[in-house]
Structures are given as C-alpha cells and as structure tokens.
Image (cartoon, rainbow, N blue to C red):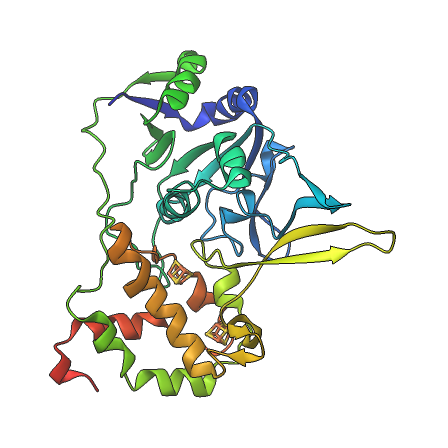
Length: 325
Ligand code: SF4
Ligand code: SF4
C-alpha cells in the first residue's frame, strides 16, 4: 500500500485537486453548532475538528425521498437517478464503516439501481478522529473502506491510497505530496462486538428494555441519525388526471406505523419497537453478513431526548446469563 505525506499548509491546494474529481462536500458546522456534511463552495467552511454530524453521510446515498417511477395507462417509466460525481472529504472511520454496511445491503444479491448509481459516483476520503464520550467504535482509528485515508500526524497528514480512484487523486496531487516512511495501514476489525452465543435469548429478556420503554417517546431520532438505519416505505400518489408516481421515503422502526400490516400491528408497543431495532442491529443482520450494523458512532445516545444508551445493553450482553440484572 502506498503512503504519502500532505503538509497542513497545502491542504487548500489539495482540496482544489479534489474538485477535479467531483463536487466537493465535507464537514461544516453551523453558527448554532450543528455539524453537517455540505457542499464546500468555500473551502474555509471545512471543519475537520467536528465531532460527528447530526445526519450521517447516508443522506448522499439514500435520499430522504426519491421518485422511483411514473405510471399511466397500464405502463410505467422508471425514473432516472441523478448522480453527479461527488467527493466526500473528511469522513470518520465509523461513517466509512456505515457506508460499507449499506453497500452490503444495497449492492448485494439484488443491487438497488438508484443506490448503485450514486455509490459509483461517490469518492470517499476518510480522516482520523479523536473519540469522545459518546463513541464506542473499534479501537483502530483507520479503515480501508474508502479511496484515500488521511491520518493526522504532526504538521499534516499521512495519506494512504486504498483504491484505483484514490491512486488517480494521489497522482494528480503528487506535487503536493512527499514520501512517508509510515508502517502499513492496519485493517479494522469489523466483527460484531457482541458475543455470538445465544444473543437473542440473552437480550430479549433483559429487564433494561422495560426501563428504556418507559422513557422512550418514539421520536425516532435515533434511527434518523444512525448511519446504518435504512428502513424505507414505498408510496404511490395517483394524479387527478390519471396515472401517478411511486416514491421511496425514509421510514422509522420506532414509529407505531412501521409494524402495521392490513389492520394488524406486529410491534404495537414501544418495548417491542425498541427491542426490534436493537435485535436487528446486533442479532439479525450481523451474524448473516459478518459485519455489525452498529458502527459505534454514538449518534443515537447523543440525540436521544431521554438519554437512552444502547451501551448499557451491550455491557449486560457481555455478562454470563446468570449475572444479568
Ligand atoms: S446504533 Fe447508535 S451508535 Fe450504533 S451506528 Fe446507529 S447511531 Fe451509531
Ligand atoms: S431517540 Fe430515544 S426517545 Fe427517541 S425513539 Fe430513539 S430511544 Fe426513543
């Protein structure tokens, strides 16, 4: 693996090179302190000291609402996905892992064409971060799930090239880069942090669920802010003149409507909905795909208005069953 060094003083020029590969987006912070990925029309808006954005980068791959097709007179026309080339700069390893997880879901056996078009147009450039009290990702601060990864070191950044696209960017920026003597980039352990033995059994009866359900207000913020939550609903809106439009919109498993089918509700209580979300994250998808669907970004704890913290469940999940509270 190639590695190079970028001096901090040349970061502005480096961003200029990145613009050759697509519209440049990165972390910004609003005047009231909310961090968000946004277009960097002005490079001075870039804030690499951000903790975590409120909405994760999944917004670039799964829009809140998108048109899938239009129908009329017994036939339909699929909508075209608008996917201009884009460079997303300054992603932390947990968010890169979140995108790697979405890739497993949306580019698996039956690739989703809308997602695939956006993903193919997206260049990902990661950067190392400083974990805070909300983080619980794996210990390594680097990941290989991107095209380039910048590790902050002294006067600048070590730049690891992790894909052919990353190599093209490094070539275009070679006048800005010097040689780095650093060791190889360590790979991250993406295994599920929960012990695999009987996890469903161990979590389903945990009395913490009752205390969480008493406090939860079903606002759904934890799911909206989660980089790996991707539930969606498909709706059709008929037009007055015949025909209509089919849309796909974000859905939320914390909402009471999520489990409604033909007048019945399979998860009518808050307890059932909370438990469903957690069991899906740790005990549903993870054992099947070998990658946990919680990347430890800490957003759900940070946004929860009643301070529900899934780490409490993870800790009890590590205890032998006989020691559960
Ligand atoms: S469950 Fe919470 S900590 Fe885990 S990825 Fe989602 S928002 Fe981040
Ligand atoms: S953010 Fe907190 S209160 Fe809101 S749905 Fe999630 S767990 Fe419940």
